[in-house]
Structures are given as C-alpha cells and as structure tokens.
Image (cartoon, rainbow, N blue to C red; front, side, top):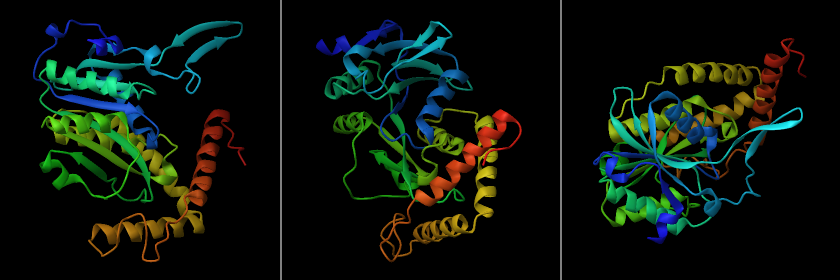
Length: 309
C-alpha cells in the first residue's frame, strides 16, 4: 500500500480496459538523438489519450539537478510546465488501445517505482511490455539504424538484435522493470536504438522512426511516420552535404562504414565499436564539424541572410 503514495490515479483502475499491451519510453541519461523525447511527443500529440495516473514529482525528482522551465515574459512569469511521469490510455492510428508509460526517469525510489509499475501491469492484465531507449554508437549515418533487443521474447531478439554484447551496462529504471518482469515470465522486450555518436546531441528523426518501427514489430500497433521520415530525409541531406564537402569528415565516415559493413557481414571482428587495430575513431572531429554546420543552418534560418561564419 505504501507504493500507492508514488502513483496517483486519474482513473479508477477498474475503468481501464484489461489485457492491453504496455509501451514505455522514459528519458534518462542517454536519450541519444532525442529518440525517446521524440517518441513521447509523437504519441501524445498524434493520438487521442486519457490519463490513467501520474507519479508524484516531489518524491522522485531532484529539482536542483533538473530545474523545471518557467515562461518569463518581460516582467511576469506566465506559465509553468511541471515534469511528468504518467501512464496514459492511448489509441493508435486504427483505434487499437494500449497503455503508454512516458516521461522522465526518476532520480529517487527506483525500487518503489518499479514495484508499482509491475503491480500496475499485474492489476491491468497487461499482455506484453515494450520499451525504447537510445544510446550513441560509432556507426555511420549512411546505414540503416540498428537496435539491440533485450528481454524474453526470443522471436524479437533473434530477428532484430544486431549488436549482442556481453558487458556491464549503466542501468535505467526500465532495465529494472524488465528484470523484474522476466522473473515473472511476463513477455517483455527492450529496444535500444544505436544512434551515430556524432549525432547523439541532435534531434535525429530517423532514430524515432526506428523506435516506432520496433514497437510495431513487438505489438502490432500502427504508427504513421510520414512526417518523421520527411524530416529525417531533410536532416540527412544537410549532413551528407557537409560530409561530402569535407575530406576529413568523408574519410572518417568512410571508416565507420567499412567497420559497420564488416561487422554486419559476420567478419571476425569483435564488435562495431572497433576495428582490427582495436581503436575507436574519435567522435570529436565529426561532432565539431557537424555541430558547427547545424548551428550555421539554424543561424541562417533565423537571420535569413546566411552570414554565419
């Protein structure tokens, strides 16, 4: 009963349909390409939704580490958008209902929050749980984005997981939830999108498309992605122009392409992280050039005169 203090129901749970799939996306320490942020915004902006309940911010957030945003207009504070970690009832493009857990990753009380999430899954008879995450990897933007898949759904891990390391990984709250669900033999899958490390600090539309496609593979839910795909094509056109006009960038991206292709062809290489010399190409040069390029584009779009240096 103590766990209920962290979750406030907006609907009586008895009013929530039983037997729905759960989809989750929590922003955490490594939301590469703003993947989860884009997915969360897409879900809440595109589809009809109803709030099932919200987790209590004051118990879960270190406000001094991540300060909430107020709107200040000349002499007054005019709006405040509090952080949100919520469970919502959503309908996809064809009206199929699912539960969507989204928002921030808590700073505190992981055991308590994960226990409450697992209890909600039990109480609502959730049929399967799918979550998305994204990390930076030294892979080229010129290749299709891959995913690492965890969980106990072998049909998904066998078919879709392109990188299968044996290593320690920094945990997220959803890792803990997945671990506990596996102990209960609840069908669960976590998709980690592998985002080019030099694009990790951008908003990369293709990463959101890959995440949504992964959720569809796991659940059968229908998500139209035409607008995201068009934004992705425009984004990559600009990146490709910058790379093509810079010999050093072209060489570095070419190296990533060679290593990526060798790994995908089952070349005896330990992982896409490194080549035969055991070295990983630094992201610094690519990131600096591309971030400069993106800044110039933003300045040009804002000023309209293209005078960025």
